[in-house]
Image (cartoon, rainbow, N blue to C red; front, side, top):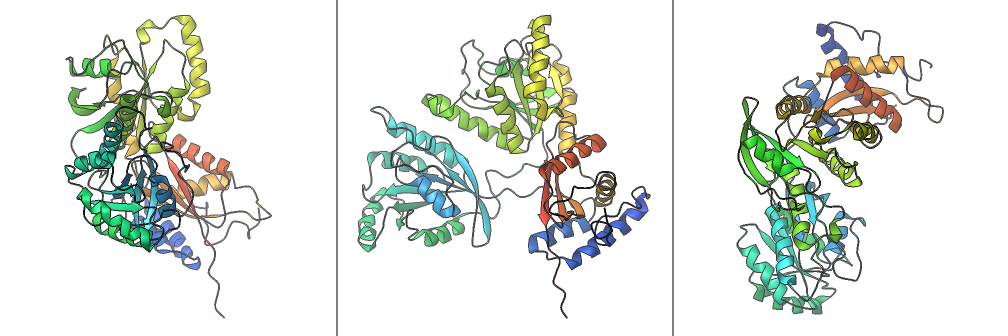
Length: 501
């Protein structure tokens, strides 16, 4: 490795990686000054200001406002999502019922970021479509700050639309009535018939052609709050624990045993629980808020109506939790469902504890197979605390508390900027990034952007290979623990400023 490749003033220097704490500020100042030679944007500056502000600077990022799109099947909701996002994300077909799950996307308009939620109308059948679509809309509205209610201008108001409108009126959420498929001025006149729905002036748009969408979004931004009122982080109070797992794995039994009473229905028939049940429980000398969630079934689009909505409510419970306990039945082989639920927790960024239930029923032969299954299917979460319990008898339930505390402590952990840069310097000196196209990407500066989960940002001169980022993540765990918490390591590749002559 040459001096030109790496050991320059504006890159992390490992020379004093073991300096005492008082020199860390000087190290950070020097590295920070070196970034002045690079092209930085406003978001970069905000991150660096956070690093300069010291150990108390880390804040939980405010929850983005949520805009939900609801409407009966085949009115063009997914096409509107694609138009708002400016890319083809949602599946669009000329048949009703293509979207069946609630899907969230990050979107931006006029410099404001928000979460866009695409919901599917239930597949039309001879019975109960009005009720099903309204139920779907109700869930979406519960989890939104404002709603776009999409109606097909070519069809006009239907009984299904009126059924959803009754629910929307009771929701106390701002609603914009969107008259989709209005491709020309003549269609705009036809949109006037939608006044009869009682939701105010209809907004004519064409999701396919983009007509009127900008005006619609301008109005939507006026309705959305700066910070979400429904998805915002709760500060203080009992820590929130979501109990997740496939149906009939013992989630309700665990909650009942922890509460010391029959709090929720327990039945051998899978899928007894439909709605999440909140319960404040004293366990291990402190109060926790447990949420018993409906089991997640294998494939959403094969579920019956009630199970479909239970899945949506389960995802909502996870969004509001801080730590998830994923329950696994040791008497049965680990399944694709189990792994999918674990991955759902990882995607949400929540802390994670694995609870292996029915441990008292485990024999030696099954134990050998189980260890192999864990090594094969759960290797990517080998950092998560494991607790062997019996929810039915309460055996080893007390071990759940230290596992939860450990996971939450990791989730809240912050590494001071000086220590983080010294750590990065040390591992880069021992294991430099391989050359890419004859050049070696350099890490200029490192900072922790947030906690919950711990999120690190590396300012670099080039793209870091995924395996090198995994190496940094692994070393972070080796040196700082982070048992029970996911870690995110992001990059910001920056070019040097052109020097003016």
